[in-house]
Length: 440
Ligand SMILES: Cc1cc2nc3c(=O)[nH]c(=O)nc-3n(C[C@H](O)[C@H](O)[C@H](O)COP(=O)(O)O)c2cc1C
Image (cartoon, rainbow, N blue to C red; front, side, top):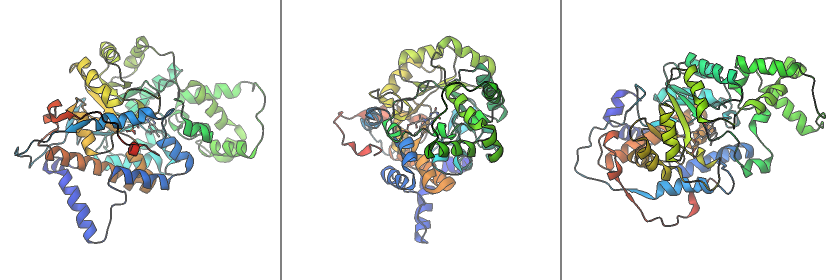
């Protein structure tokens, strides 16, 4: 997306291009509506991939609450306001981005498509949309950066038990040109996810989604240390499934398959990862460690309580993402958009507040921005695009979302993102909505 398109009507241009292509017999490669996109992605994915991507925690009531919160607000459009030229760009941490959309960090993408993070990195770069590299990516941040040219990128960190790994990843993120560090706080313990549990499937145990670790020198040192220790405990039973898991781990490990198989290092790496991946004992006091190890803006992801937002500002961070991880962590939690206004009020303009969890269309972005979000992180929809059509699918999903946002912005009587405010919205009666939004 060029600067020219940003101001000239990205939505209308995209819409016209789709209709023109249709006239010569070409259809979009991914459905443009959220429901059809979801259904097409389901058909394109394995049972394990679908469970991992679409699933949420427990009874998935937090997932439902995310959609209910977005649906509980209605846009109250204004007319006759000259919206012929619209500016959908935003400024964040000293950078200009073409729209408020940011690609959320999503792990284990190799489950969905063999090009995984590289397809996403290429697609977001084409659009100029910032991509938040996941700590659980299937490709190292260096490999991703290599295919992105100037494409904007941030890095998301899960705070490891190992200080050396934390410091090393922060250093590498600076090295690959990240413009911000996102520290995700809500996943120090994996949520209770019945869809994955019922399949007994966690990608990391198969060596999927640990590339940021296996490519990290501090992590590699931990693996070597562990490999040198005598193996303790009973030997696992040799079953066909156990052999398949071992082959999976080995296949996903950097280096040559046979020598990895002989050394047993991939298995040690998975065990080391499971040991050090997160630090549930982390407290506010320890955040200063990150500050010491990076000059990049630090953003805390997973804040829902206004008091935590105040503590975040007090601790000197540069931004917040209001998020409940797409309903994947605590069942029965507050809908993310329901938490946004109180957090925005608590922060009171001292840092940008971003938003995610539940964004499925352009009007959702209008609503989040109108309630004070400086930007929104888009998650599952582009993963669905990846499953259906790789890089092209990610590109189209994000392009469509931004086009729809641009059109909704104009149709509601606004010529720029900065014109959106709480006045744009009216609360609808919270009537119980049919469960059609559930990612069945
Ligand atoms: C399959 C999947 C993997 C995810 N992996 C990560 C991750 O590695 N790091 C992270 O901070 N958030 C992760 N998230 C959460 C997203 O960044 C984002 O908060 C969430 O997808 C928003 O909800 P939505 O997709 O329903 O809109 C993941 C989400 C999904 C669906």
